[in-house]
Length: 428
Image (cartoon, rainbow, N blue to C red; front, side, top):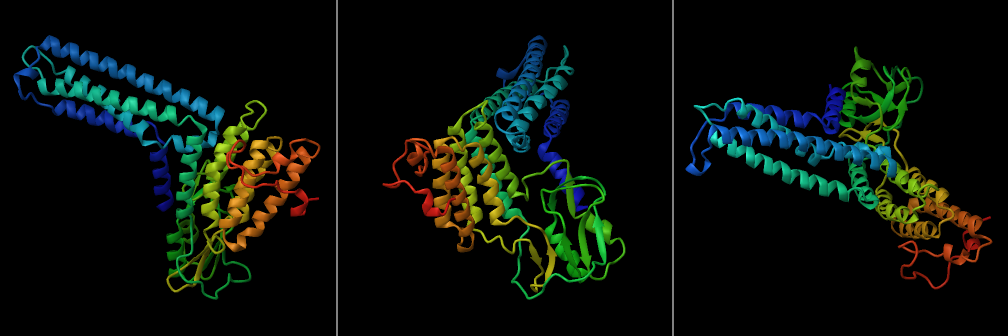
């Protein structure tokens, strides 16, 4: 049931109509239950006045709902065209948009429910006043929504949001929770191969559930596909080493959540992918905005720094409380994260002095802060950067500038007196 529950949570997070529907039902019920309480003579309304006010509220909320939807569509168009379609996975989840629609639609149904109760003998005075207050709250939510999404149309805001989600995904990804014991993956043929029933991307795995299942049956589970991989139907999903109980395949398959695309929940690499997409789109010939790429590199450096100061070597080995290996999950190495984060930006920004200088600062900073075992990978990326700069600016008068690091890309305070010479890093 875990896989079903995970997909249900994903649906609830990404749905733009579920919370507004709840608000609409709540408003209709509240409007039907509201009684006439004369709190003060100031709140007394004639039937005609109450009808006019409620009709105005119904019309205003209907128009405001359409305006929110229109703004949302424009945001979607601009975000997918300017940033990355993958970014929409985060935009769909924003609670303020859903809350705004819920308040506005709830006010509409509440006012409509009151409107049908107004007669010559009965006026829900308190309800009419509440409808006006709800409308003001809805307008306030709309202003907050508009302000928030106008500011989030900036690439730097998108990069900051994605980097934050990536740090959370790194913390939630499967990790070992017990001391390492001298137990290796069993050799020989597995007793069971669990295959995927349908094609889809692995969105998450229930790490604790897999460990409990393996401990209960004294087995070792080896997943052959990583979180974020697209798995065709019938492909081997995991292998079981040990005694296999009845219905094992169905039970194990339910502990892996599939979907039509990757999510960021346990997939920190997907966050890096989104940020790189935003940067290389800014570096395309149609946009030609290297400053945006530099701003993305600011937040990408922070995410890579967190990854580089976290031990990832045994992250895919899940152990029980006794330290016995129970589950092996393919996980990305530091080299994978680093190459994903810088390779395409270096390739597409090879002719931009800004990007080359900012990339050099990024790599120099990482080399000082990441774990000792991770530094050779940073040195390799620095060597590739030197080769790229020499190939792009070898015959240019700006070669010295392209070889200089600058945290602002260009125009920032000088960080060294002399630029780096390509030969000093072994370029060919």
